[in-house]
Amino acid sequence: MFARWFFVRLSAAEKALDQGRIDDAYAVAAKPEFRRDERGEKLLDRLVPPLLARARLHRQAGRLSDALADLDKLAVIGREGPDVKTLRQRVVEQMRQGGVDAAAEQAAYARAAENVRAGRLETGRLDVQRIDDTRNREDLEGELQQRVERGAQRVRQASDALGRNELLVAIRYWNEARERFGRTAQTESLASKLAAAALRCVAEWHRDGKLERLMAARDGISALSAHDPALSECQRLIDFCARATGQLADADFDALRRTLLRIKAAGGDAPWLTAALNALAQVSEGRELLLASPLGLFASVAAVPAGDATQVLAPRAARPAQPAHATDGHTAQPLLVLVDGGGSSMLLRNDHVRIGKAGTSATIDVQIPADLQSHHADIIRQGDNYFLTAYGPATVNRRSVEHTLLRDGDRVVLGTKGKFTFAQPSAKSGSAVLRLSHRCRLAQDVSDVILFRETCIIGPDASCHIRTRGVDGRVVVFDRNGELRARQTAGKHFLSNNVQTVQLGQTLEFGDLRLTAKSYLAANRGNHA
Image (cartoon, rainbow, N blue to C red; front, top):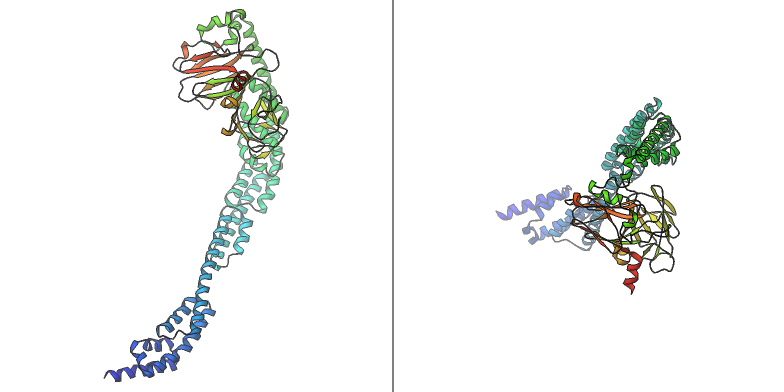
């Protein structure tokens, strides 16, 4: 009975193979019992050519998994000859290469998508064209086209607004087109028109005193300045106007007058500007009248508590000897200022500060221990501004410079390793600070160089020139008729502290804060000795 059933199945498999139904024939012939029969062995031999041929066709068509499946069938029936092994090796290598290609395709898609979504449309368009996968390419092409159309719509709205002389609206639409949908030839072309209109409108707004419009256009003009360098002057004018409003709010009339004169130099005269300068002249006249009154006797220490009146009335001869100030009328000696919790600082009162290499024989104010020229650069104070003039390699905020205006927070590098940060921490003081990097500290472990002008604030706040840690109160060091004095302005002992004259070698105490000033040159000589 079993033999009969076996031969029936064998005959069915042979018939299926004759009819080209290879898988049906394989399903029967793969059974172990057929391998022990002579007729079954012949059937297995007949299965090899069609399975091998079909595997080759699958490979040629790129159906590598199907090709590998047919080769596995040949291995199951024990017919894995040299041809089968060679074909299997090629299929496996092709599948491995296909995985690499898939990863490369995925990376190409990710790169194109990033450029499109970041608004780099022209670069994104080129990347999209390099994508082989049709579906991925079509998806990104659709997104790219959508961005281009929306950007074009914003450009049209900006152009319409510009036609109506609504510059602020036009800049807003233009900036939205660039930031949200990407830069195109249309946005760049419109930028030139907007820049020309901005130059015209800024001059008009300045003339008419429409400062609120100047302030509103600040960010847009900053973006447009990349297309027209002339707009940098407009940006400078707006910055001066913003500074002037802050100085007016602080009632800093002297600084306000200087800023208004800069506005006049940058943007030309205007009725509102003339009126503001006239009003400041009246303020100045009023102050002079007050100083000429009996109250003027106390004007030099107006901020000193009432208990310190004797400091004002005391004759100069009765004051303590050896004040820490210059005696040659031109160049004040540098001071080493030691503050508990604040480290060591050098205080310079020159308008012209020379910077160079430590150990040089040249007359250098700030000798930095770095590979610099003997006289590498100067910092020059002109009015409220500080300028850097470099004679050797120098960068400010990674931009190579020879002569430039320094601003608060500028990072300066002289040579390759002479690094410091320029700071003007207080809007109410003209003094500046060179905060040296750790490797550029001067002799006596000086980490800060104070470019002193009238006042220097010591305390824990960010607005202080000398920062302290773990010390209560604030102290201001100020110049009074060529002498350095100090008084406490905040802290638990504020009301009990009088104005004190800063003397060389003497330690002054202001509550928890202790201050000592020495001659920096004498301290260095003593250190070398």
